[in-house]
Structure formats: structure tokens, C-alpha cells
Image (cartoon, rainbow, N blue to C red; front, side):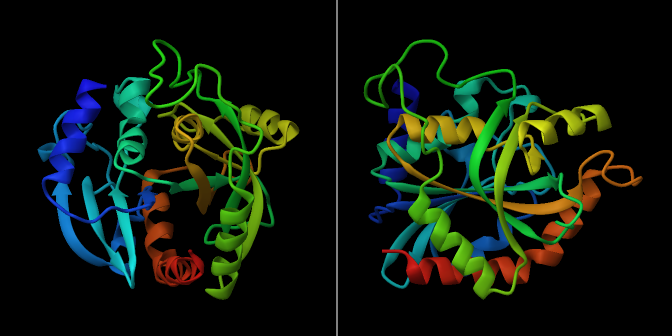
Amino acid sequence: MQKLNDAKEFIQSKTNLKPKLSFVLGSGLSDLVESINVEISIPYSEIPHFPKSTVVGHAGNLVIGKYNDIDVMLFQGRVHFYEGYSPEEVVFPVRLFKLLGGEDIILTNASGSLEKDWPPGDVMIIKDQLNFSGYNPLIGTNYEELGPRFNDMSEPYSKKISAQLFKACQQAELNTHEGTYIGVSGPSYETPAEIKAFKVLGASAVGMSTVPECIAANHAGLNVGGLSCLTNFASGITDQALSHDEVTETSLATKPKLLTAIGHFLDYYV
């Protein structure tokens, strides 16, 4: 809590804006900051105790600005468990947003499609999730300032926000789906056998993030939206080998429509 409060006080000393809405931007999606009028951009390395992104495609800046009359906070890149960070460090940005007065958070990611008819370049609105990361960020001491010891997860992703995201993506002419996201620890990609098992469990997309942040956000009482950019087919769906280059290339190719979609979502946001 002391680390979170140190970071909170630092951010509050830099801006008078008080965003109620935040976006966590995943691999290759950092340029979504172009959708807002930026007031301040702070490198993660300058924020006390804030974890630093080490993965290509994650810029590593906290951006605060406005879209029309809406104050918005963007986490331009995230950290992952596979980078060697603890579960508490992975969800540090989500908890910081809550302490700064946040209410709604949109978690974006690049993910692998488990559906043959959902090709790279399509998007999926996350309606539910499966936690196969091997950890839960709430294990350990519970801080009542952040949330209860046992929190409800019966609606991990807000139906209202999900509907707004779906409409915005369709309006941006993105092929849009709704499904369940399964989170794994990484950093190795999944085997074909694992993907077959995940499909049996009901997953439509797989990735190495988002799930712990969603858990922490629900714990903190935030309303959550989830947007997956499908950047590749998961292992075994096709014969193609997987690479992070494909992930970033597809994210960049999809970026113009995603920018448009975020703009539409912000137009709906109240």
C-alpha cells in the first residue's frame, strides 16, 4: 500500500485531470494514444515502484489526456508474469488506477485465435475468462483499501461496456466476435495438445496477460471491458510456426481500424 500511495501522490503532482476511464494497451497497440489529446506522458521508469515493460511492442508510458470532455488514462504497455514480475507487480497499474479514482478499465491484448473462421485481424470482445496462468494476484495479504478478501467474479467483464465495445468495433468495420479468453503464463507458446484442451474448455482466444488484471480490477470494484486483437492462429490450428513478429505485424495492420473503434467507444462512453 505504501508503494501504491507513493505512485499515486507522484501522479497527482503531475496533473489535475482525474480520469474515470483507463485503457491497458497490449502488444502492438500502444499507438492507440493517438485517439486522445495528450496532456502528459510519463515513462514508467519515472513513477515510484512502477514495473517497467521489457517486451517489444510495449512502449512503457503512462499517458493522461482528454477525449472531448472525458479524462482518460492510458497504460501504454504492460508487464507480464513471464518477465519475472510478481503477481502484485503485474496488477500494480490496475490498483493504482483505482486509488486515483478510476471506475472503468478496458483491458486490451494481442491473442491467438482458437477458431478457424476467426482469422488474424479479427477482434474478440471478451465475455468471460479461464485462468490457466498458475497464479492469482489476490493470494497473500488482503488490503481492504483495495477490495474484500473474497470477491465476486460472476460478471468479470461488464455487459454494458462489452456491448459498447462490440458496437464500436463493428462500426469501425472490424470483424467482431464475442468469446472466452484463456490466460496462460507464457512465455513459450502453447502446444497443439494444449490448444485442443483449451477448445474443449470453451476458450476462443489465448494469451499471456489480462486475466490477472481482470481479477484485480474486479477485486477493486472496477468495471472491466476486454478487447482482444486476434493476431495469429493458435498452435495446431494451422501448420504455421508462431512468432512475436507476426503478433506485432498484425497489430500494426489492424491499428487504423482499432483507433477508429476506440474513438467510437469514447463517443458512446458516459
